[in-house]
Image 1 (cartoon, helix red, strand yellow):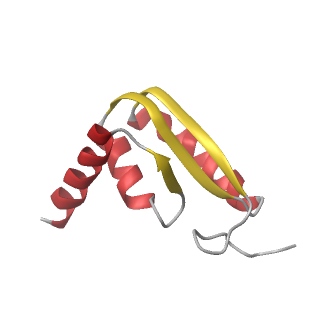
Image 2 (tube, one colour):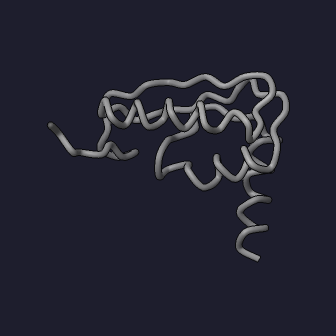
Length: 93
């Protein structure tokens, strides 16, 4: 059994996970299951958030904390990116 953990720089191939519509903290358990399943298969998860229309603070924190560590974000609306930055600044304060 392999114990390698994929990273943003070493993992190929990748898998794209598309998130659309409302993205709230209540969705994180399912998304985290997908991210972990990808890692278990030695795939690096790419989150495509292009069609996200609404997001809450819990989801923003998850995205900000996990980007580059557990997954990459390949497409992201400006309002989501700005919210992620605000979450990072809020936690750092």
